[in-house]
Length: 75
Image (cartoon, rainbow, N blue to C red; front, side, top):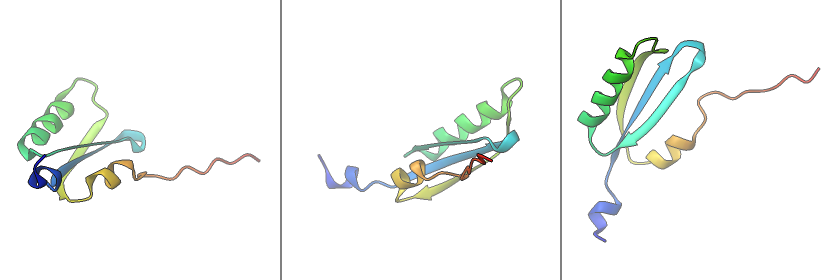
């Protein structure tokens, strides 16, 4: 395996929607992620309202990082 393939930067697509819904995915082709985001926004009854795409050299860590911490109240 080539070292350049192992160290390749990725782009992260982060979509936000109603009720705090967040969808994240990564890919090494920005135009592909733009197409995914556009299609998801155009779906009938889509809950997504906006998106961002950014370059990330730590995309695996970012994919598993929670967007919101939920603290249940057991009282």
